[in-house]
Amino acid sequence: MEDYRRIADAVAADIAAGRLRPGDRLPPQRAFARRRRIASSTAARVYGELARRGLVVGEVGRGTFVRAAGEPALADPGGAPVDLQLNFPVLPEQAALLSASLAAVLRPDVLAEALGAGGATGTAAARTAAAGLLARTGWRPSPERILVTGNGKQALAATIAALVPVGGRLGVEALTYPVVRTICARLGVAVVPLEIDEHGVVPDSLRATAVRAVYLQPVLHNPLGVTMPAHRRAEVVAVLEELDVPLIEDAVYTFLSDDPPLAALAPDRTVLVDSLSKRVAPGLTLGFVVPPAHLFDEVAAAVRAGGWTASRFAVEVAAHLIADGTAAAVQQAKRADAMARQRLVAEKLDVRADPRSYHCWWELPPPWRADTFTAAAAREGIAVTPAAAFAVGAAPNAVRLALASPPVDQLGAALDVLARISRGTPDLT
Image 1 (cartoon, rainbow, N blue to C red):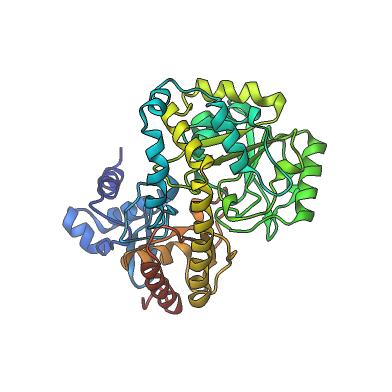
Image 2 (image 1 turned 90 degrees about the horizontal axis):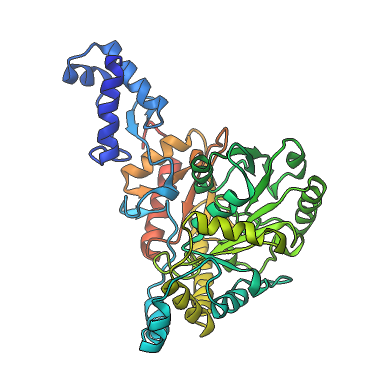
């Protein structure tokens, strides 16, 4: 291996270990060369290699900085004092709400059942409770068609594994949930970007390429926050019917909305995936898969084969939280919380945002680029996500702000800092 690559590997190891953190500035290339006792030309190649790997970004007149993580959905929480990368909506008052419900699960008779073996179909009580929780305007799933997994990511993995074979192709929006790309890479599935506009996926783009299935987020899309209007829903479903392609509908943020799912228009073609991680808490979660009858056995087999079945204890806890109204109460409180946070955003930033959403999409003003803005924010102790983390192909000049994790007063202060940064330039910030 060439010397410059060995040196780049050493710097990359420092970044991976946290010895160099997002926003840290590397020494000027000449200083780096003197410190490493290498030629200036070699130092330039090291910095070029680090940039090629996506680990650093250069700012004209300011230097070279460590980039923020490119896969925020796979990172551990707590990497920055103010985390606007990851959405963990946990309200201060919800612990008290949950504790009363969970006390019932700890009764000896209930606990004895909860300590038994789990399975892909959970229990009849849990399926009935989940059917009521997942129901939305114009759609209510049959309890007999609900499968349970440990979390939403497992629900997605099982569904993709069931519908798309190794070497197959999955159509996804050109800006999509990053974990889907990672799941597909692990399963040997190719992701194919589908064109999007202000209403969501463009129907004609579905005809442009052959795929085995399509993954969409029609309600409160992550990262864009847009919701597909009725006319676009009808167009998308018509094309999927024409092509005879199944749909994987990610409904994880729909608890913040009353909009109907695409499953209401295409019940025999849609596998709906949801979870409790956003509705309730990331540490107290369960995944749900609602396939049509003709795909039920295939998806259930994938859940079992992947080891993605939920524990019986998690199933019993979820059933109690739903049945006694606790999950619904937490959901309503989070709807109010999300809207309060979006009002802060509206006061302080010029961004694209749905007032119901826990995240927003910020198309940055010139001369900022997503990488340089992310690095500037990191130097202020604020973690945001550049558009490249979500892009399948070319990335727009934007960042996503996840609003749910910090306390409201801390969020407001962070938004003030981001507004100040955006009014400056990469050379002056």
